[in-house]
Amino acid sequence: MSSPVPIKLKTYIGYGMTDLFSGGAFAIIAAWLMYFFTNFSGLTPIQAGSILFIAKVIDTFVSPCVGYLTDNIGNTRLGRRFGRRRIFLLLGAVLVYIYALLWIPGMPYFYYLVVYISIEIVAALVIIPWETLASEMTDDYKQRSILSAVRLFYGGFSTWLATFLPGRLFEHLGTTNSTVFLINGIIFSIIFMLALLITWSTTWERKQETTVTFRPKRTFNFRHIFIDMASTLRIRCFRQHLLMYILSFTSLDLFYTVFIYFIIYSLHGTSVQASNLLAVGIVLTGWSNALLAWAVIRYGQTRCLKICLIVSMMCFFVFASFYYWKPLLMLPIMYATSLVYQFFKGGYVYIIWNIYPFIPDVDELVSRQRREGIFAGVMTLARKSTSAIAGMLIGVVLQYVHFDAASPSQSAVTIHGITSLFFFGNVILLLISIIVAFRFKLSKENHQRVIKEVARLKNGGSITDTDPKTKDILYSLTGIPHEKLWPTDKN
Image (cartoon, rainbow, N blue to C red; front, side, top):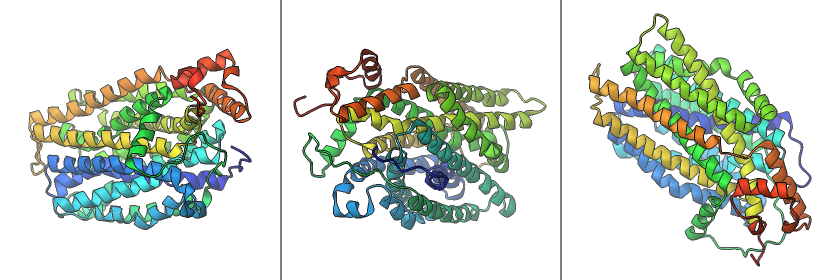
């Protein structure tokens, strides 16, 4: 990046604020939407799951288009005037009020379906361009790590608020009052709008390079979008990163969606207790993010990622044990376990997002292009596709084990099914993520090799002059023979 702009405190603070929307909106959906649909809107578990599934399937077509659009809109008159990334933050600030409409109780199935599809589209328009900004603003490992840490602070705070505030509203208005969700939705819509405007006003974009490319410009069509998407999967470290991202974040979906049912029905708790257990992470806000950022900078992101995934997985063994064993101090132990889980869960969320801005640097060796948008589009597509499947499967499982929201108690089959889904689903997803993490090679040191090699090649160096150690590192990251890197019109 030529002539980098120094990142000041206001930019760190402003950049992360969009995760109030990115993290908070879907934390509320993950924790409460299924429960709202089945217990307050008269939908069956399968109907509720199908809304999540259909909307996210539609979004699998929207997200790649947004990624392609934000990479290429800079070539248009509109993009040259307003930029190719931040313009979408302004658009999202206008449309984000739609979120409150989702929480109106007693509406028909197709109303909820249309509103939820609209929310997914607005989210794609905001989140995909925003996720590119860390790569746009700086190439520096430390600065990107701090940006990700600040993002995690807001994400953690919004997740806490998303789980804490409904519990307080339930306490004040009653656990059977459906207006709790509408009030909650209105409050968060206002928060989201303000957050997007602040991010827009405090960030900037990379100045587009005007170097001659060896590839001809192409007109917009869906074929080009999916060709570009498929080309990202050539890169080994991105395939590994994408798999860890999908599996570990699907575990988050499963945790937040089923945890309410697990506490209320498997452990015979209340919705207020479930909300409090989810919100216990407030004590971690702030210092935990600073600690994680320091650990990543000091010890490297791959080592910290392994630890966070392993500890998170072990917490589910403790949670599940409460179903069979009721210790005298069960509630304090549950709070302690939830605290540990949320710290290390926040750790792997932070690290996985901290890794993402470095992937386009590796891709530049392969494509000779800056394609942050298309990578963000692929990640969003994969994430929402698996999230759609997970949401649908949760609804199917609840229906299969005969969950009845109208009944004050559930059968033994239903309770066993909820418990098994909560434990085995999360453990399997995190275990596979751990295995992949041990094979992942994009460390701080290896990234610096990539940056230096790209700079050397841009300054007229030859790909054949790369030193042997760097060649080995680049192959471990890209999985592509060295002679095929930095392609020209001849190769």
